[in-house]
Length: 437
Ligand code: GLY
Image 1: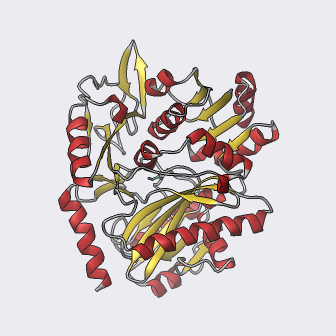
Image 2: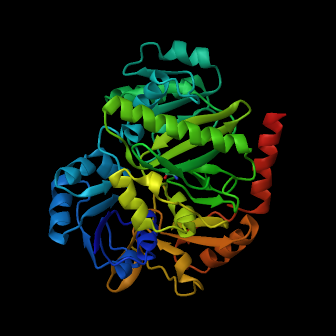
């Protein structure tokens, strides 16, 4: 009997639980959640709401349930050492220990690692904890720079020239704000191109790669408005993306593999979890924008429904270091995922308002995220509310399905109609053709 604990309760964890549930193996699934997610609750033996960031509490819940395997969804438990304590308590864990999760929790750590191990894809960068040298380095970079807070800020710590910072004056003001907070930060060269996510299962030695996905971070159509956790994503039936060349995928795979090897060398033990490279395809090849130490959200909702192999076998193999013995296959289908988010999201979202999903035609394509049940009614809880995934032979067909379904969800919500449309995909292709000449 497989007793599995899933930590986290967003749409990503709903996708994780669905993939586990599809396994024909005998199993009991438990979820330690931040909120009451009815989609996860329906599939689990038990869902308990508690502090998922408290290692001692997570371990005590794991012991209570008898879980032998844990899967950590979000980044904050990783940053707090939940994986370390689970392993110490004898629970095999998918999700890196705290030191290895620095790949996501410290921007400076990742840049230094790539430099130390001569891994391609890094920008020109410098790390700061005061204003000393900031003006000089900005002058060296000119108009194309990025300022990154060196820690977790829910995707809001990164400010990019042209998008969020419109002059060196604004960049300097942001750096001063970070210094006042007492934080370190990285200033680096801005890459010009198209971003894509390439996630790999990693057991510390071997990697098995997932299909490439493109996310849309800005809140409003036309890639405008504030940054969010991600408003929607798409993937293509050939597991690449329409604007990528074969060499881009090969280079991204090679960077993930080299990074996993570097981590093993540095810490003497391997990274066991999901290695999520945020890449930029540029005129000069693939560059690494950042690493995350978990499944992407929404990316998990694109790739996990396509997984044709047994997810329980994959998770056990990640923990046991036997991933090379597992055949990992994904269906050759295209996907489009769109998030419905509360009106006012991300800056001043409405909360606790009822939403209605009863008009959804395919409940298997619905993933609940920041929702709650109040007086027996489904309400939005203030962050990304629910995601819809369309799966078909082409991105275009998947988009039409996802758009129709998400438009049927009622309540004070909005979504981006443009994600995955033919027009937006063509823009991405044209942009890359122009850059590549
Ligand atoms: N897709 C963005 C993230 O998961 O951080």
